[in-house]
Length: 300
Ligand SMILES: [Mg+2]
Image (cartoon, rainbow, N blue to C red; front, top):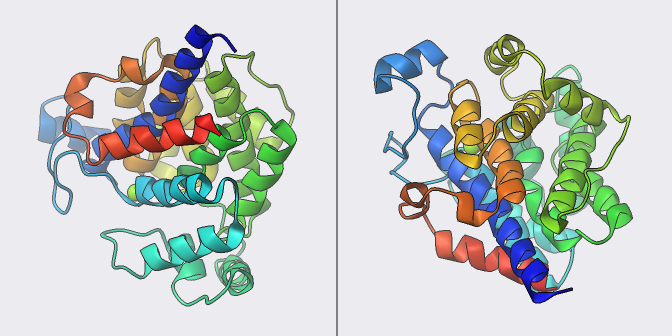
């Protein structure tokens, strides 16, 4: 690979992780709100990182916290090590994070092993009436796309497997796989993949689909994996630049931090870290560490 290509790829890999964190941190201030409430509070769309208790300005939430656990494990182990990833997630879940999703908590709070986590995820799926296709595995999965960018088969398989640590519903894994295959193609600067999988179809429909439909989904299907995926794709591919992509996703409200994280990862991989506004990067918690982890994952 020529030096210029490699520099471009590293910038897009950093863009994926920093975009994820910045979308998460911007969205944290407006999580669970309706767009009307966002406008009333901020006098229009939220475009700047602001403090909003319990979040400090530039602080990201569980989405980035879990993604960084996964990224650190991949970097230190040289690849996907399920036991190590589970241990890191479980330690984080029990460390008293400011927020944690219900599906993730159900799988991780008491499990002492990977098998127990999967059993707890299945029990949660049953007890919730088959409603465990939450966005909690999608929000953390992006580091796999950096590490396995050159091996689509492994990337797809590991994305699905990793999702089942906390999410029994295969639709959550399908969304992770499609998101990561797309991210990997963007990072490598290749043509986007094609698929007829349910997640791929849902994502494609959202790009160029109506904004009203997405706005309604953001409010009515909060936390659902396809809501985050569809908003992420519509934002990253329907908006001309990274800033407008993240601002669009976050200002739909609802699960705004996760929608922002998914949109930010895709837009960051598309446009590169250099496209992230300095006013977002400078206050972003641990931004140097996040960029460094992305570099390590694409050096492998
Ligand atoms: Mg969150």
